[in-house]
Image (cartoon, rainbow, N blue to C red; front, top):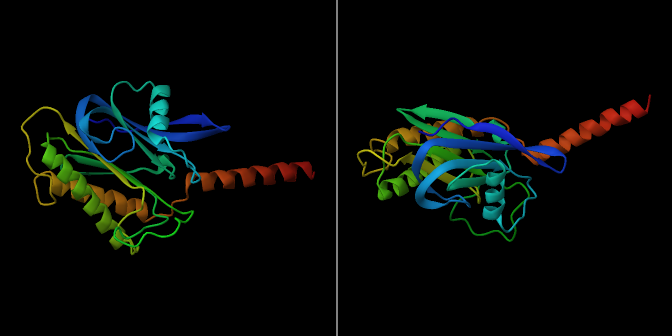
Length: 235
């Protein structure tokens, strides 16, 4: 079973930067497109880390591994990055499937659109973590990632945004290692259908409310702090 995530933080440049951590009671099978722990395999934890919109490190997997070590996360796991404050995670459930989404849609793009000369400064990220309470075959896990992506895209369309996702979206689907194996994960399968509904609901809810990138909130906090200090000094 995958526990509800724990919100914590790391100290960086004098600020407390939020982190969201899921810990599994027992090892789980997973399929993921994450920079750390992506692919198919057995995983023990998931980490979703907020970073500033200026983030440009070329070693995100190593960075995430170091964050996991600081949190004493043992064994193989999955690491995700986002400019969204992960405290704004949205969770939805359907028929035993649980889905969590951090939704940043600053720059939705159609997947097959021509590549722009340069990405704008408002690139967002939609990170999806989902738990299916039944063992899925490898093919079903891959199909479940596709199903979650289709459900995300449906939600984005219903939000009226001109894109299928953002350039940095990631999906993680986890399931037990034991039990009877489900062969299918498509949107009309036994487990793919509730997965699609849960992901769709989470992304739709997350995208329906204003989301300010964490680093923008930080700048606002700095401005407010400067204003308070200035007002005090003017006394």
